[in-house]
Image 1 (cartoon, rainbow, N blue to C red):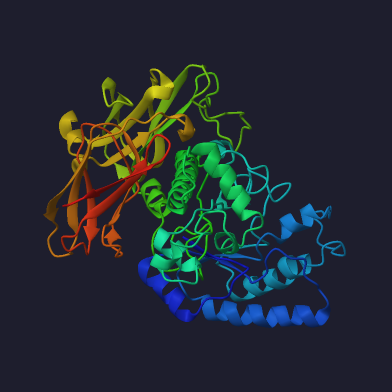
Image 2: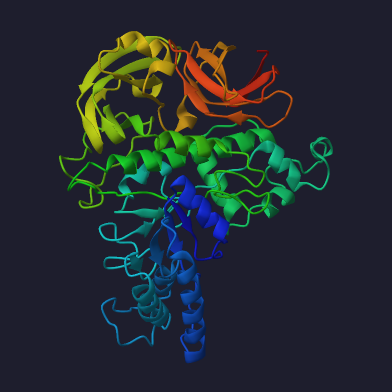
Length: 519
C-alpha cells in the first residue's frame, strides 16, 4: 500500500494507472494537513467542488481503497487544547474544520463512491487520535514526541500504523551534492563534516540534526566525526529502527480474531530534492539501507528474532494493542537474564518446516544450536520458541527457516533457506566487535535477467555490511546492508557491475571498517 499524503497533491492519472497495473493499494488523503481550517460558506463550497472533481476522477481506479479527510488535523486540535466531542455533530465552533471532514467530504464520498471506506482523518478513532485500540495511529513517539528508543517500537503499536519513521542521511554521493563544488572539491572544504551549515541546511525537520545525533549516539559508537562515517552510522540507525518496528508490529498479525496490528506504512518512500530525511530512497533514486531493511521485514515469509527480559513477556493472546503491557527491550549493560524469542511470519500459506537457531560468540565460535519444528501458517505470525541467551552482551544469534524435508545443513548455503535473521545485542554501542576475515567472490549469473550472484562469507559476526561499486558508479542491488555470521555463504545479487571491484563497509569497534574486494 502507498499513502498519498494530505500535505502534498492529488497525483496525476499516470500514478494511479501504475498503481492499478502493479497491484498497489492507495490510501488517499484529501488535501488538508497539519492545520486549522476555516469553514465559512464560500470556502466550504470550494472544498466541495475540489473534492467532487477528484473523487470523480479517481473513484474508478481499483487501487483506490481508502479515503481520509485530512492528515493530523485532529491531533493538532488536541495539541491546541480544543476539547471537542467526537460524537457531537452539531457544535463545530471550537473546531470548524470538522465541517469539512465530517460533513462536506463525508457527503461527497457517500454520494459518489459509497463502496470505498472514508474516515474523517488520519489518524482517527477511539477516545483520541493516539488511541492504540481503534482506527489508525501515527506513531511518532520515536523521533518526535517522547523520543523513545526505537527498540521500544513493540509497545507503541496500534490497530493500523499509517505513519511512522526515522531519519537517515542519503547515500554519500548524494550528500556531496549538498555542497556547491563537485564531489572531489567538496571533500577538501573545511566544513566537509556532519555539523556544517551545508549539512544542517539540508535537513528541514525541526531540530532534525539534534534528533538525528541523539539516536545515532545512543546506539552507535564512533571515534571519528568524518562525514562518511556519520552518514554510515545514521543509515545504520535508520535501517535498524524501520526493521524493528515492522518486525515487531507484524508479529501482532496473529490470524483470525488476533489481528492486533493490521498493517504499517513507513514515512516516507522518496524525496523531492537532495536532503537528509525520513525517506528510504533518496532524490537520485539511490536506496538507503532502510529500503532493504523494510524489504526484508515485509518479505512474504520471514523468520524473526528479538531478545527481551524473561520477567516481561506477553501472555497468550495479549498485545500492546489491547493490553497495555510494560514490556521493555533489554540493554546489554543489564544483568537480568534474557531469552530470545523466535517466530515466523507469513503472508502466504506456509506448509511447515524447521527453524535452525545458532548462538555465536563475537569471535565467531558456535556456542549453541536449537532446532524447532513449525507447522502450517496461513497468513499469520506464529511463535516458534524462546531460547536462553548465553552471556548476552557477547552473543550474536542467527536463525534460518528451511522447508520440510530439508537437511539442517542447508543453512550452510543461505541461498537455499527460505528466510534468515541475525540478532545482535542492543544497543550496538556496547558491542565489542572482533575484526572479521571476509571473502567475496562471483558465484554465477542468473539466466536472462542480468543479475550476478556474489558469494559472501565472514569468520566472525558482521553488522550492517554495505556493498558499493569501487568505481563510484551506481549499481543495482537486490539486497544490501546485510548482517553476516560464520558458517554460511550469503548470496547477494547485483546488476551492472561489469567486473569492477566492490567496496564493503561494516560496523567495527569504534569506527566504520572498509575493504575493497577485487572480484
